[in-house]
Structure formats: C-alpha cells, structure tokens
Image 1: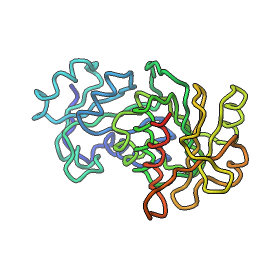
Image 2: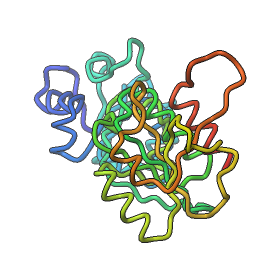
Image 3: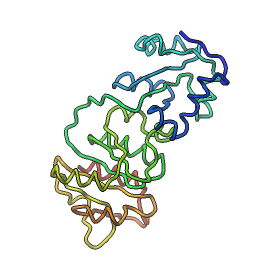
Image 4: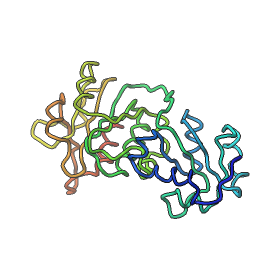
Length: 253
C-alpha cells in the first residue's frame, strides 16, 4: 500500500484542488468523506479510484478495504485527511470517486424531479436524497443550481448519487424531451390557475419542477409546464422551504 505522510505532497495538492468545481469538471471526479459514503460507493457501483485511510483506522475499515484493489489504497496521516476534508472533525477515510456511476437500482415509476436555479447546496442534496427515498428515477439539475458534486451537496445526498440518476443540463431541452415521452410536467407556482398538489392525476410518467428559494421557477419554464401546482397551508407561514415542499409533493405521488 502506498504511504503518504505529508499534506505538502504533490499528489495530495492535486487532490485538494477537487474542492473547486472547475477541477472536478476537468478531471470528472470528486471527493467523498467518511465510512458511510465509501460503503455506499462500494455497494452501488461507484467508480472508486483511490481510498485514503490512516494507519490507525486500517483495522476498523478492513471490511471495506478488502473490496478495493491494492493499487487504489493509500495510507495517509490524519494531517493529510484534515487537509483534504471540509469538516472540522473528519473521519479518517476519504475516497476519490469518478462522476460516472453504474446505477442499477430498478424503480417502480419513471418520476423525474427538475431543479431550476436552486442555489443552496443543502437544499439540493436534501431534494436528491428525498427523490431517491420517494422512488424517483432521476433528478435533473438546471442552470444556476448548486453543483451536485460540491462537498456540501455530497454530504446532504448521503450516498443517493449512487442510487439515482443525476443530470446537469438545460431544463428547456429536458422538458421538451420529456414531453415527447408523454410525461406530464408540473411546475410549482402560486397563481389563480394553479391546482393543489393533491389533485395531481397519478401517472407513471410525471415530472415535478421546483424553483429558486426566493424567486421560484423562472417564467420561461413555467410556460412549458402542463399544469402548475401549489401546497395549501393551514398556518400563517408565508412559504415552505423548497426541499420540504419538494418532499411533500414527491411522496404524495
């Protein structure tokens, strides 16, 4: 097993750059931290390129390391782990993972979640995780939406990127393609013509469009929907958090 003891090592410096989107895009890979995410990547076909682990934790993670090829294991110091981590008290295991996954999970429906300019990483990760839990087949992240492989989104997804298909693309084109496949497209908006989410006609092919935390779904995209929906509220809150709203709608389907 290769051993690296300094955070100033040239290879470690290159890995550190994966904190930035431009390097993640350039190299088509990103970092995952902690035992749970490494295990999820192993169990669900994640492209694990390297695993970095401290000498002290080798016995604890032996059940994971035995599934990984020897030339992909790197023993490092906790100083190196802390240097690469975005957490104040990181677990002593980090993996470098390719963005392309072998998504083998069979879904009962073909429901799709579309995210328009959702900027908060926590919201994006939570919605992907919830879509996974609700049995959706895919999440499409449109322009302005937080990078799905940023550290905060990755932490919020909790491994759901290994279970559900993710795409980053233009939503206008995606909606046009979904319509050709006979999908019903529902936007989220408060207006006189919108209907309660409870009145959505159940179907195998449904796409739900969620928008920016402050401005909602863009007007251009709302013109492309078949129907817009809202969530009736009994209290005095002005609005719901976008991730909470998405969860309510997704599970209602």
